[in-house]
Length: 457
Image 1 (cartoon, rainbow, N blue to C red):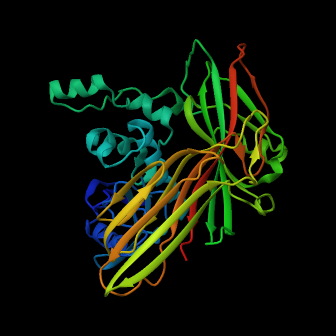
Image 2 (cartoon, rainbow, N blue to C red):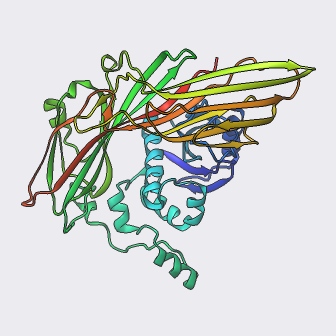
Image 3 (tube, rainbow, N blue to C red):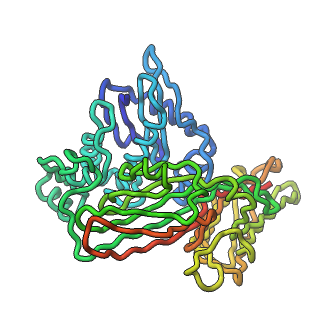
């Protein structure tokens, strides 16, 4: 299985290095970073030092997730993922199931986010070095994944707290508090749930989040689209409750992956989710939406880019105008509880400029604009939009040389619409058995952009 694990910063610095079997040379990190630096799309597309890019969602990453790298006189397999600007690398000497390694790297990143907060970026890792190494020690045994459930890990290694940090400063020791006893779940058939959980107020919340990956051409037509969803849950239930989640239209679910707490046979036969939930926040399942439910998709928001170039007295200059607006007609299916006009939240546009740009001047009539001079990227944050608002961005720039760029850069669009979905998947019932209390239950749908790209030319 895994021989070594590395975590690299956005600049290629090795932050974490853990060897489970033989020691792997850091040369594999140099090999990876040469490929990552050559890829114009790595780390959000553009400069690795840019602080305004949402690394995981903005642009496509062309670095292969699996590469064959030389180690001495042999070759090994290098697996990589990109989360919160950090590159997680796993080195395997022999052939293994690729999805197993990639999923484990994502689980490591999820655990770090659970322990240190979102985003689990470079500063979070540097502030919690000892906790990171303790977690890796418990999560991996001789290169094989061992304990990956958050509740089991928290029973052994407490999350960082202010008191623990003060204690480490005073004593000069580690701020990671490690328990000598095994968590109760390790010897039960439900390792994801701790024993003896008690709450004064019992409640569970379910979010059905659907992310839309799409490519939009310059005329606003949808070139391609793909919709994936996840069911996020927050459980604060006492004892060992048994939950049953039913859907109104489960046929829209294509293929899915389920949390270990879900009874797979029941889902396959009846298309219902029967489970004993973990305590706290967790992802109940992920799924893809059938193509038949996505055909004819119209996004709730549009961006019209207009690029122009002029050559005045031997100096090449350019200009761009972006117009953003909410469509009057959208294919999103709104929840019955939603009232009022369509409101799109967390709207932002990321616009890279040609690399040959020397100077630029950007004006917007609403929202805020941030321009990264080194990366040549502008991020326009608009927040909430409705159909009555017509935000516009105008920019002029000077180009080094007299050669016009071969193509206009593509734009990345971010947005979110609460109480809406693409597939129409909704919950018809959520029942709790095995306990005498009646918990508070809340369910909502959220539609949001994933990798949403608008072509510049």
